[in-house]
Length: 551
Picture 1 (cartoon, rainbow, N blue to C red):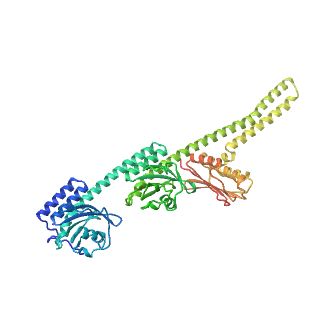
Picture 2: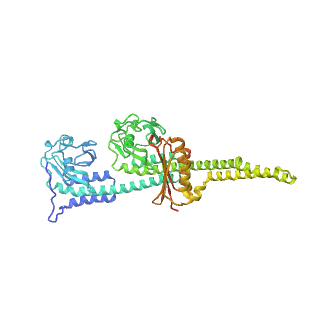
Picture 3: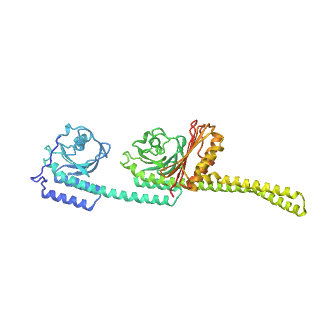
């Protein structure tokens, strides 16, 4: 086997004969007309075979798994013998030589060439001499064009150089095809994304969005099946959307326990896209195992920084899904994540509003009850006592003075109860002295030592009130549940945000979803604030609030 350099004229250009120019023009015309690839490949094989006086000619395409696929054949005499659909390449055969060197290769003695391709060409086609030239598409090896001779002598020495002109035309044609395909793929992808985004913007139900995403991805990638799977607690998964080949074993709503090495488990473990190019070894509970799937790609769905699920695209074809499939699926998983986040936000907002309404109603009922049972009753009793005293004084009865004194006592008690009621709504220490005074008063009423480190002055009333109630709720929980020996309260301004922290040395285990803390979170959310609770077992509890001061 030899590598032959191109033979050019004194200017470095190939020498073209009239018949060669005519053949090139015919091929160039086909390229300009954008004829189907099969028609173009067959025409090129026929033109070079006839032009170069070959007995046989053909064109192959390189695949990603070290195999080649015939895409065109030609025979000078009758039909070309049938060729396999795919060949495995082997080190030393011309296809591997062209792939390794990216240059033309010549074989003038097939008896010394190894591999199944050489055996077929030598024994089945009875070829004695061959020349193959690479076809490059945008700098990447795409295929090769070859001519074969059954004659005793080798093909002419200029065969390599004359083949080059045709391979360049084929490369140009394939580049145009790939460019158009890429543009069409982009157009189709953007259209699919717009359709899904419209559903998300309309706040469509999650099930409808998941179904639409699965269908759009399946049609766009031309795969057999698409599954959207949500991760459950305890290692199980739930199929929330399915498109493609129906599988009665895994309908939507099915809960599965995937194997350790499937796509769902790999994505769950790594939180990164994953692919498997042979799912024959997948576990029986895999969402794609029963479909006869051989290759698949899984892309994570991440909602607000948390791994929510995975989208799986699968194909029964033996070749792997194209490079870049993960990124294309990722655009749709982002939309799915947005939809999930929107639904969760709406749900959280509705729950928050319901809690705020319920808390407001409860507080209003408490105030009404306390007014009715306390100060109002005393004031009614005061009025009745004063009326009785007035009649007694008119009659000159000596009990009038005692009744006035009794009414005065009732009025004073009513005033005290009104003060206490007002303090329950917003304490006087907070209203008059600010957050430091309010927290100090709370610490004084807490039945354990509380260290106070409040280093802020007066703040906007809503901020002061919210911070005060955070401290009040936290210290109440410390006193009731923590079994703590000490607590500490700090408040300071950092980067325009009031940071309030209440820490104790108790048993921990506090839950952030308790009604009191949920109410605080709702209250802080009105001010764009955030509440954080850290309470490891036997590690004490930290309740922290961040309240922006801007505006």
